Length: 255
Length: 222
Image 1 (tube, rainbow over the protein chains, first blue to last red):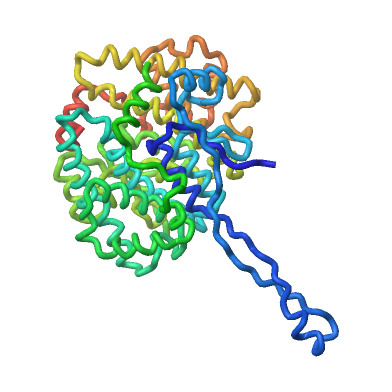
Image 2: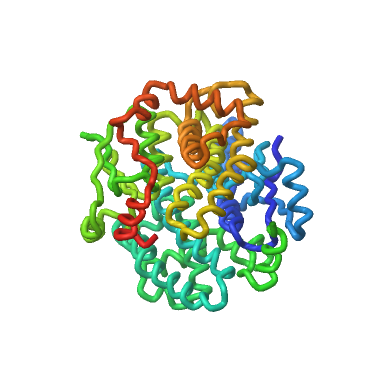
C-alpha cells in the first residue's frame, strides 16, 4: 500500500513548486454515503430504500516534504543512490523514486486525470505547459542573475509574458469561451497557467491589465476549492525566493 | 484525410533532430520545409502558424504542433513507443529527460565562445560517462533485456541511441567502459527502420559545423 508522496528539495520554490501546485490542485473526490428515505418512505415501500447521495469534498493530494539544507545531506542522497541523475527534485510516489520535473508532473497529471481525455487533448495540454514552462524558467533563473543584469532580465520577462505567452492563452479562452484551457475540463494546463500568472504578477503587478480573459481566468482558478486552499496561509506553497534561498541553493549545490 | 507529417525547421539537427529520429524509427514518412532565410521564419510567424513564434513546428493529424517535448510525446504515444501503462511511461519520461539534458549540452557546444569549447567538451564527456551512461548501463544490466523499458522498443531506446551516437561524435571511444551500451548500440542500430535512417540519403542531418552555426545565427538569436 502506498503512502503519501514524499518530496525532497530545498525549502523554497525552485523546480519543485510546480509539482506542489499540481499535487495540491489535483484533489481527490471523497464520496459520502448517505442513507436516505428510511424514515420517510417506509410506510410506502415494503423495503427500505437506501439511496446513495454523494457529497464531493475535494481535498488536495497530501504530501510530505524533506528539505535539503546542507551540502552533506545532498551528497548523502547521491551516495545512497536515491537520485537517478544525481539531481533533485525527487518525488517518492507509488513505489518509484521519480526525478526530472516534467516526468514527475506528467505522471501526476496522468494519475489524477488532469492530462486530457485523449491523445489530442494531451497534445494541447503538453504544448501549453511547455510554453508556460519556458516563461517560468526565466522567473526561476531571475534571482541568480548578476545584479547588473537584473533590470534587463525583468524587462525580458515582461516582454515575453505580454507579447509571446499571455496573448496565446487570452486568445484560447476568448475563442472557446470556456472556463478551462482544454476540453472544457480542469487540467494540468490550467494549474500551470495560474501558477505562472501569479509568479509574473509578483514581479509585475499590472501585467494582466491588457488581458481581460486572463483576469477572469485567474479569479475562477482562485475559487477552485483545492487551489483556494493552496493559496491560503499554512499551505505547502512556498514564498518567493529571497537572498537566504539563493544562498542555500549555492551552498547545497556547490561543486 | 491525413497526409504525411510536415516538419518546419532549418536544414540541420538542432531541436528537430530527435523528432526526425522518432518518426523514422516508427517507420513514418515525413516531409520537410526548410527555413533558409530570416524571411522564411518571419512568414511563418506572420501567417500565425507558430503558437509561441518558435520552431520546431510539425504539421501532424490536423494540428500545428510546437514544443519539442509535446511533439515527441504525441508521436511516441501514437506509434506505441510510450510504454503500456502510466508507470512504464514514467520510466520512459525519466530516461528521455536524462538523454535530453545530455544532448542539449552537445547541441549548444558549437555555439559557445571558442575559448570555452575545450572546457565545455570536457564537461560533456564527464557528464556522459559519470552521470548519464552509468544509469542506462545499469538499467540494461539489471533486467538483462534488449530494451530499456517493458521489454519492448520505446522512445527511450531511440533517444538513447541518438545520444550515444552524438556523444561518440564528441569522443569516439566514449562507450569504452560501457559494454551493455555497446551491445545496445549494435542491437538498436540493426532495427530495420533505424538501420535505414542511419544510411546515407536518409533525412538524418549531419553534425553541426561552423558554417551552419553562422547560418543559424542569421535566423535565430542564439
